[in-house]
Image (cartoon, rainbow, N blue to C red; front, top):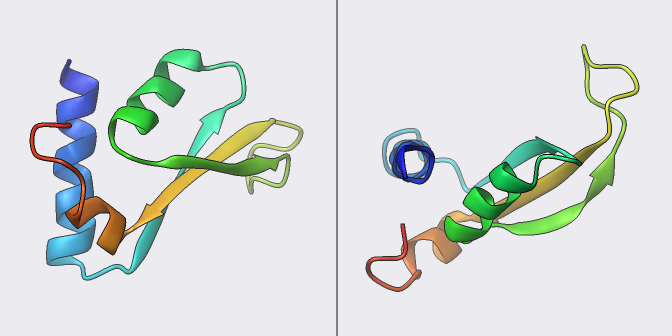
Length: 78
């Protein structure tokens, strides 16, 4: 869907244009649909946190991956 395509474009941009070494996605703990998108993008759940600046008390799951993982994903997975 559009969310996965947009996420993939963002991942390409942060790794290829901005040169970031890794990235994370902060996803509300109850947002299963967004967690599935993160999985489709090859990210993995790195844990849970309530320490999100500006969102006191919001429980989020921290999903992420590094540039090497992004570049080594199988063709057609996004």
